[in-house]
Amino acid sequence: MGLMKVFSGSEVMAIALKTKLEEAGIETLMRNNNQSAIVLGAGGSIAVEIFIDESKYGKADPIITDFKMNL
Image (cartoon, rainbow, N blue to C red; front, top):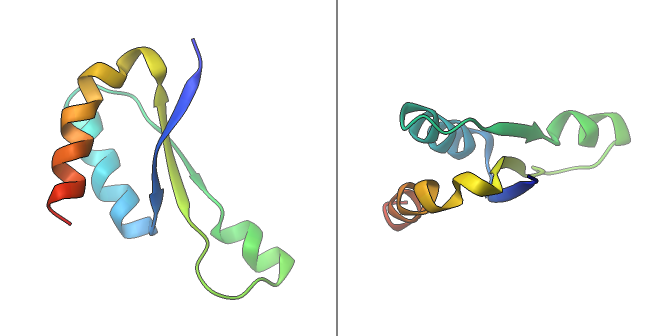
């Protein structure tokens, strides 16, 4: 089973969604590209991404949809 990206955005929003998913028993992997951008000298904010196991998408989809609708 592979990982699928379910969110890309600011770190604050990523942490909020990660918390909601984990409260529902869905393990997440958060990849923060901000540190890489600093090392490379890139300006601005680079997205933080959240990944879940693709087999959990059916359970995660309503949580993700509700989260995005309430942004």
